[in-house]
Each structure stands twice: as structure tokens, then as C-alpha cells.
Image (cartoon, rainbow, N blue to C red; front, side, top):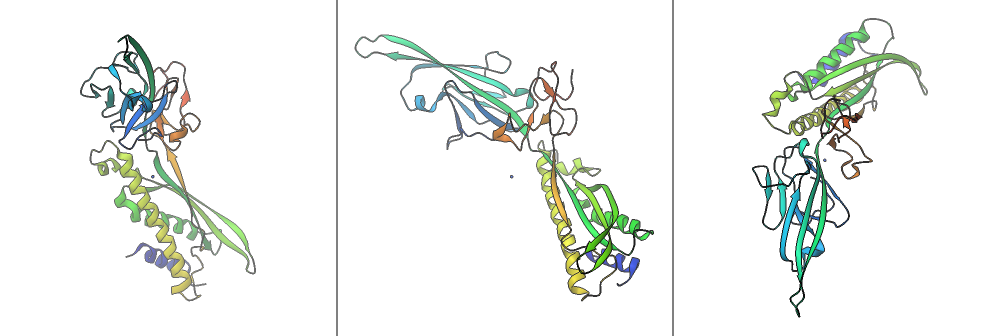
Amino acid sequence: MRAWVLLSAVLWYLTGAGGRRSSERTSKGFIYGKPGHPVKLYVKLHHHSPVLVCMDFRRAKKETVDPTYIWIGPNEKPLTGNNQINITKTGKLMVKDFLEALSGLYTCTLSYKTVKAETQEETIVKQRYDFMIFAYREPDYSYQMAVRFTTKSCEGRYNDLLFRVLKKILDNLISDLSCHVIEPSYKCHFVKIPKHGLIHELFIAFQVNPFAPGWKGACNDSADCEDITNHNILQARDRIEEFFRRQAYIYYHDFNKTIPAMHFVDHSFQVVRMDSCRPGFGKNEGLHSNCASCCVACSPGTFSPDVDVTCQNCVSVRIYGAKSCT
């Protein structure tokens, strides 16, 4: 039985009628340095970094004699190629399977020679390029929703029964998406309606969350499970929105002005997205304006132990992505 039809039957029974981020990227995906200005970029967790070029765009268009490149990583030690760090002979660097601990300052020093044609005199020129790289992940979405239903009275068991039946119907509607309804609540109020006097209404609020029991089974061992859970919660939001849209259609079209005393109040459905970040990550629009909507690995001196969206201060923390103040 369709969910909106089921709720209609219950109401009649109860009462009857009455979207890697950097502005420095080129068309080839290369990120060039900028002399004197650190280039800030963000790499999604478990993805590869873009290719960092140990050269600025202007220098790359010129002939460079005897170039050498030295890359220094966040631990202030020279970087060498390995299974995770790829450095080419032309000074390009890429980090594979980027993790929060790999965040930090990457510095490259380019050395090359200028040669005077008349005397063959050589001069060594050095230029340093800084790249600040941060691991990030997408926030986990949930939705805070609110609806209203008319009722005969603020007293009696029917209000509580409607509330419990509605929650069960919504849970069943989205259970295959590993989503569920949490923190449901309602209050009954007197509402003055123009030309209709006072009526009783139930103000119902609840949150739709993508972490129902067994939700990890939907991830299929994916490292970026928030992509899957966020896709599921968007579908859950759309289903619930359609459910209440159908409620309005049923009551104001199918019943021809004869409607239950308890019924959905048209246009009362409201929804607001709520973001949360996994432990070790947080949002900081001031520090990360180019990735303001991202959950970025907490910087040294900060940590996040839970699913809050901000990193807390802790002077003893020396790493990126700290989950505790130790």
C-alpha cells in the first residue's frame, strides 16, 4: 500500500470526516607555484592529489638550463619517490591515496642556470615554491524537517497515535536507503486562521539521518562512504517531500472538501539541511574560504572528537586530523 494512502486511512480511522579544489589549476590539471605566495589546495580523502609543478607558469614557458628540484614534505624532510609519492624527473609531484596525516606544507626549490652567450658565464638561480595541501571530506548530510497537522483537540490519545504512526510510515518509506527518523517531537498549539477562528494544530519536528542500524553495509567497502550516504539521504529527502505533497493532493482534491478532522496542513512542510563532519575534521570558512563547505582535516593546535562542524583548540596537538587533545 502506498505510504500516503496508508496515512490517509489511519487519519480517517482516528477521527472520521470533519555538489579537488584549487583556483590555480590549469587545463591539464597541473598546479604551478607562485613565487612568494603559498598555493593553497584541497585534496579529497583517499583520492590522488593534482600534479604539483616545481615552477611558476611564467618560468615554465621559458627555456630552463640544468634544472634540479628538491621537494620537502610536511615533516621537513626531503621527499623521495615511493608507492605513495610520485616525483618525476621534471620536478612534478603527485601524492596518491591522500590522507589527513599528509596535510601540510610542501616546498620545492628549483635551481637552474643562466648562461651569458658571449662569455659562457654561468649563474645559479634558485626559486622556492610553497604549496599548502589539506585533506578534506564531504560533510555528512542530515535533514531537519517540520510539518503540521490539524487535530480536534490538544487532549486525548489520538495525537500521540498519529505521531507514532507517522514516524513508522516515514521510517518504512526510507528504510531501504539505510536512513531513519530520529529525534521526533510534537507540540499542540492553538492557531488563529483568518476567517476561520481558532483551530488546533500539531507542530511535528524530526530529523532524517543516513545512519540507520546496518548503514555501513550500504558502503560496499567504499573509502568515501559519505558519497553513498549523502546520495541516500538526498533520495530519502525527496521521498518524504513527495509523501507530504501527495498528502496535500489527497486532502484537497480527492476528498472534494470533505476531509478528516486530522489532516496535513498544506504548505507546512519545511526542510533544512544539517551538515556534520567526521572526527578529526571540521569547517572553517575564514581559514579555508576556497573550500568553505568542506570538512577539512583539523590543523595542528586543534582537534575534533565527534561529529561537530568545528575543530576545538588544543595547544598540545602537533598533527593534522587529530581526534583527541593529547
